[in-house]
Image (tube, rainbow, N blue to C red; front, side, top):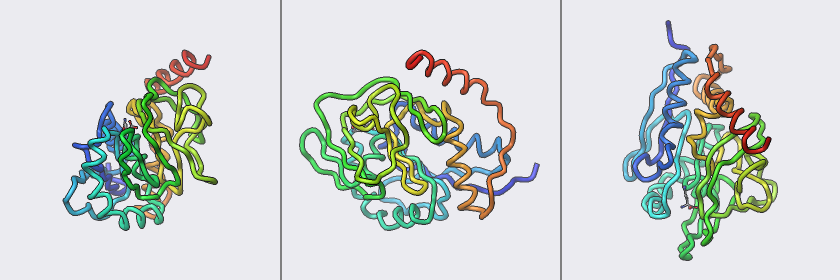
Length: 242
Ligand code: GLN
């Protein structure tokens, strides 16, 4: 079968920032792109290396505070480029530690301030008490399930759109029932799991935006059998919120 076109997926900091299975998001995007008839090229970006050219979809995972500190300089070096990509409607999925660093700042529980890119209008502070456990959200992509484990408590700036409303779990801060943040096509979330294999609608929304950005045309999905993911998600929702 001829390819419908090539999509370049850039995985940020796979060594420093990839915990609780977040690598599964990159694998999910690459697999789904292929199942939908597109060619997927995954390019890893490591600190100190030139940023991959022609990024159509950018993914980053969670990490310890120490991992975040190790990627700080590189993020600062590539800040203008990442901001320009975001302005240009490049889809991105930033999970947990990278979500925090795509915000305005992350202050660790020890009081160290890690400045962020400010692409998302969110501010995060570490707390002695961690927020851990399964999560169910109501989002524009339907019910989204995942798993959170973070000490950072995130507050949305005024007018910042969240990814979803928390039906079970803590989300951004355990208080206001918001989870994650979305600006243009940049999606920040605390959800691990990994989140995309369990939530194909979210994965395909990122893919659709990447196709528009890379090829200048609408996403032409193929028929993909998501029975296993859909059954698992539905059971999880039923178990946690009834
Ligand atoms: N260090 C951050 C926190 O605990 C990020 C954790 C994570 O990425 N899972 O808030």
